[in-house]
Amino acid sequence: MSFLSRLFGGGNKPEEAEGRLTQRLERLEAEAETVAAAYVGSTYNRAGDLALRADDLERAVAYYGRAVNAFLEDGQREAARGVANKIIRVRPGSVRTLCTLTWLDLASRHTATALLHLRDYVEAAKDVDEYALAANQVFAMARMVPDTEFLEAAADALDGLDFAHRAEEVRGWAGQHGSPDALKDHDELSVACLRAASRSNERGKSTSDPKDAKDSKKEPKRG
Image 1 (cartoon, rainbow, N blue to C red):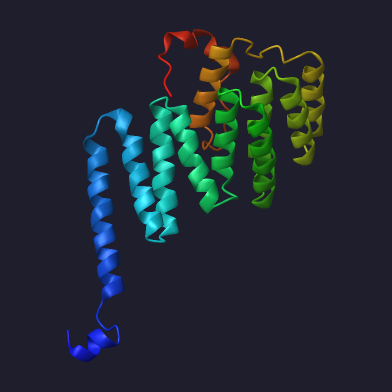
Image 2 (cartoon, rainbow, N blue to C red; image 1 turned 60 degrees about the vertical axis):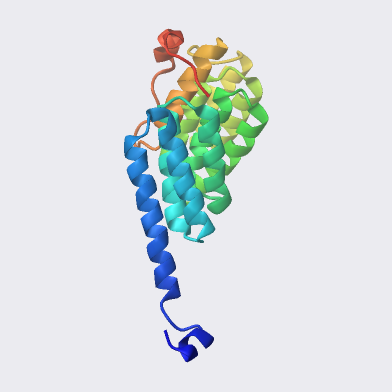
């Protein structure tokens, strides 16, 4: 490189930096293919952090999403929640992530946070015209959760999504401390919500039936 090029910032520094970033991300992707399942999420999380530091928001969010999926598949709900919150900081209106966070809040019995994420989820879903999908998710949450405060908020959310009949049904459950399918056992509820969180991006499906969680104690609990 000539003296004048160095003096005035010539050369291909942006391209070189992009190339180095891509190489490092590719190495992390290869690592994620070989590490034990418990560490796949952490590897993708590192890739997301690397992309974020380089101000590559698209790749950062993509890697964080893969990290969340990996953590959910391995049952690491708190790790999944931490990375999901990173996505929200980058993209506050991420519909799928807000839905996932709401399920994870319910799994951990963080009702106050669940109410905040439920509100944000419904607003984000309305912004992208996903009324029916959001209503399915909210209704599924209401079927599982016996908490009266959450049920009342879920009913309001369903009204806001123009599903008045479902809203009325959920308000009836609130008065009875839960639906007929509500999971009163905390471990069963936690596992059912974790399963639902991992499926929250499947369009056209609400979640698994709450009754499926009856054998959930056979599964090891992590995170």
